[in-house]
Length: 262
Image (tube, one colour):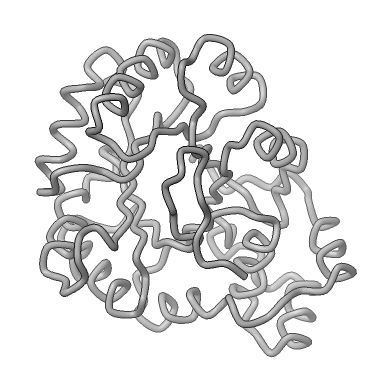
């Protein structure tokens, strides 16, 4: 299984990353440093998370060259009319010269205005790729009708228990990479009998089964953890394949189970 995906603009993006939502600013640099030392090269943050500074500190203190680390941050809904300023402030907090991917966090009113600003920033070479988060088919159809640039990524909640099959097919058709947050259902479904059975069958953990399921469907996956052992565990998902029958069993677990507002 490939550890990178080529986005629709030719940029390569790691298929596994670390999400840092709900990690305190005071702890973020330490957690991200663990991840980078463990082989991660993709970190997902956002202005609203309040921890961009810690992400940047870890990146700058790492021995890994900046161009080998993929950084995503996001535009919050209150900044839609000041998207350029919001991006500059995110870069200031990160202490980095650019973001690899900048996303509209939610399709709240006036998101179309914000998208035009993101297109301008991308065309000026100030962002490597632009995309959206939490967009459904209806919002994507609206976007594609007026936009000059197809979003590179749509980041959504996605797991075997929230299998968004139609949206996955739509994004594949349109050349939009789909990225999964909360792929582990915030641990609420790790003890499901089917997950436990397959973990035993493949000699993997329940978390590794759930992460790999998303990867095998072609998604980018950003599990979140603050535990060094879990961070390593979540990355050891590229050395096996789930057979077609077991993928179908995992697909069938869908119950539109969402873990929260985001």
